[in-house]
Length: 71
Ligand code: FES
Image (cartoon, rainbow, N blue to C red; front, side, top):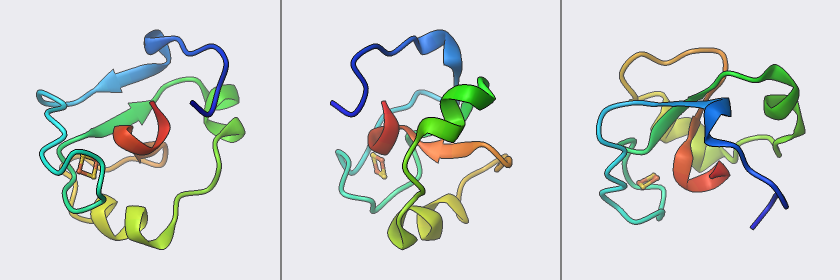
């Protein structure tokens, strides 16, 4: 776990957040939007593989991440 405390109110979960690939960075069904900029800035930068999948995500925003990598 990357953070000792996690508040789901920091995120907007999109769709059903079904995590179709179970976190193997092969889908974008876990797309989330981080609402808290302070929290967003604490996250490690996304890996190239995460960015590739985010490019396929519906409704991409400046603070989009893949939930399986940050939640
Ligand atoms: Fe597929 Fe997150 S569950 S990339």
